[in-house]
Amino acid sequence: MKMLQTNSTENWESRDSMPPEFRPGPAVSLADVLAVLAFIRRHLLIMLLTCLAGVGIAILYLIIVVPTFTAKAQLLVNSKLTFADAAALSTVVESQIAIIKSESIANAVIEKLNLAQDPEFATGQGGGMISGLLGWSKPKTEANAARYAVEPFERKLSAKRVGPTYLIEITFDSRNPDRAAQILNAVAENYITLQMNKAGLQGEKWVTDRLNELSTQALTTEAALKDYDRNKTNDTTDSAGSRERLAAAAESSKSAYDNFRHVLRKTEATQQQTPPAFEASLVTGASPPLRATWPKPRIVLGVAIVAGLLLGLAIGIVRDLSDRIRTSGQKIGPRAEDGRIERPLPNGIRRDHQLDASAETKPVRLTSSG
Image 1: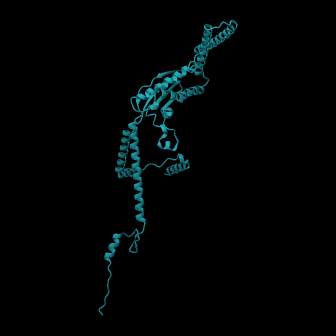
Image 2: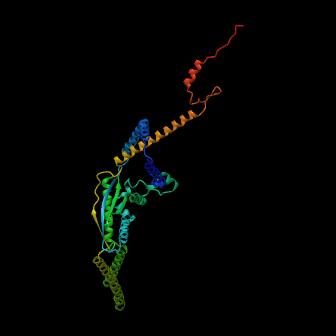
Image 3: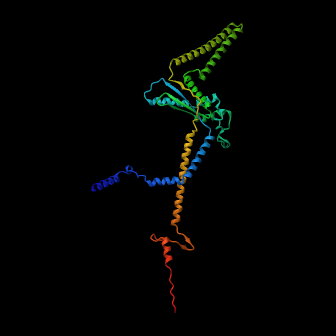
């Protein structure tokens, strides 16, 4: 017996010496479980009503909200360069993601598909009546319509890298599933075209302007020489000098034009022989999504039911607290009626005993005969 007492004492001492975070918590008693069940039974009706209200609000939300469809596509950025570490590769792929989400790609797609006139992208034009009256935004015009469409376009477009690979997944959100796939395919097409033509010179404006300028100059000097030969004068000395100057100018203009074309062809041939640093290709094209991305009925209804239960629990707790406060106030507070203060009786004397004693004990009046 002494040994058991010693072991129990040592156990309690070791438990007290343990840190607070390692001490075992209090066990849940049967009284606590019964109290919780009683609480649920008392407020079950309120919890059911709040759950029904939450489900009703969720159904109304599902009916009113416009569904959003998300189209997906995958691009492969096949790098021809060798990187020393994964950080350099990640930096290069992230730069390509930034190009996909750039404003230049957005402007090209908006202009190609005429998205500036689409109500889904034109809702933010003008910034509202109040902003227009206060001068916070520019008025609606055809010139700035495309600029207003860029902001919702960039918000709906997203791109991310698929793991440690060269794959980039791009998505686009729209109310129309066919429109979402069309816009996403246009984004991928513009990005691939940009990657293919960024090393070429055919698309450079200054090259085209310079080539046209040299061609016009060569044609003009050649035409002037032909006109002079056709309308030459009898003065042999003067005509010979003028013709030599015109012939030299025509030869110089033609030589400049030919040399520029030769340099241009040589540069393009060199760039075509050199493999590009990146070769972008479309791995999976965007197709119209079959289901809406949002709202999802299961998630919305689940959140509504949980929120209704929590609201019902909160209402039940508040009601119990208010009842306790009211009951304690009635028990502790003194009552004053007609100027009398009723004081509680001692615990040892019950009220029924007091009544019985007062009924049995009656006053005796003494009288004398005399």
